[in-house]
Length: 291
Image (cartoon, rainbow, N blue to C red; front, side, top):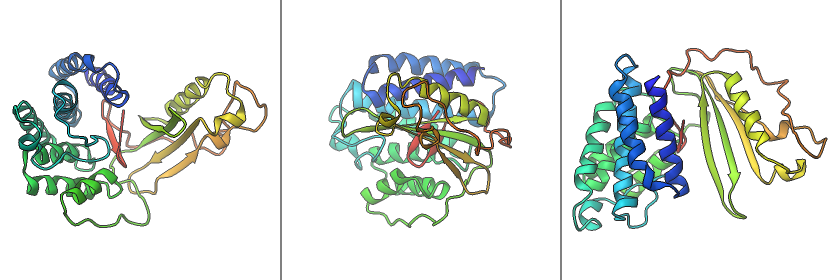
């Protein structure tokens, strides 16, 4: 499907931003993703609108971070842009039109999925960069309304000196669809970890992905695994508490060398995820953009 191909292309862009490697290919990938959405005549409206918003947000990031380097040091994945950065940091005014397009695409997609905070984050970033404090505050508050655990939205509000509220004590899934989230933390240096999330429409698909990731650990011993990778499976169902299964702890202590296997005996893999996540949708969970 065109939307699924587009989502794969956008995931490749995200990984290039995160790794700061291969960023010279992002422009072409975004152009191909846009062509996929143009050809997706019968796709779900929300998948297309959200995807177009993500393209525009990535184009703004590409402009400010890579092509023109007008980013004064803020982190797209953890913070928000400085207020009115287009005036204070972009002296040649190269990013204004790109940020305006990002805001326009986000507004067009704002109500496509009223439960996902991804698009309001896009809108908040674009408006903050353009100097619209009130608009950015409203967008970040909308993101927090959709997901009270979105730490970046909370951080962005504090940067704009706006009031915030603590999240609720119990996390329930605010979404109207169900999905499985495979969250991975992998060590990239002695002191740094990278956090990656993958979403699946069935638990069986999440199981296959987790097993495949475990096979990629190579020659590590069982003891070494705990210090190398963390894997969690989060099951989201509408209106119900999120259920988390820590996976590395489900690997038996013996044998000490691979191939390793998870013990899935207490994970209800046969239970359907209904209603399932529509195809071609990215999902934003707690600061993490997941594909």
